[in-house]
Length: 272
Image (cartoon, rainbow, N blue to C red):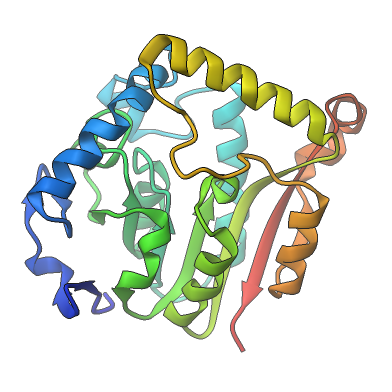
């Protein structure tokens, strides 16, 4: 298990010494922590209302296989891709940026890897506190994705799981994450949806924002990002050294993708 520290007030603190609430490591002051919980409560309410939260502990423990909707079938494909990339490797130190309910951290911990997951949602069924439902051993730390530069450690694998368009200063964050890699370490960005119809994406996001504001008087766009990727973003990832491949599912439903004008990629960067 790699030695991981976090920068707090210009001091590097071992994350194992951080305050711990319900199994989650907290690197922020109590005031900031309370603010984060309050700020993201609207988003949690939205996910509850739209039935995106899984509240059965047994189903949580068996994700992604226990839910067979499109979202979780895609996550099953993600897990297959990651396992294929790391098969027959030694025990790896893994950092997951956007761990969510911990499903991926749990799956990788079950096969022996040392996993640290970060996220900003603090909820027992749809955020970091789900760690209490798992039997495997891994760590969860509350952290904004753009605060990745506060971490100090050496990882074999860093995973951005289906979240790049929602990260503030995403290219800076990805570039900084390279500094956390061991030699020959990898960054995997999974489930990158690249839109071919920007206007359609803008309309979708506008409609979602209006709904969110009317229901919870709060913006869904927490970090003021585009909330979608287009061809320019695709080019930017290539410039950062990522090898981008169309996901197998995308090829199988090519006609459907043409109508949606969205193509899903997975990207891998290898440290030299």
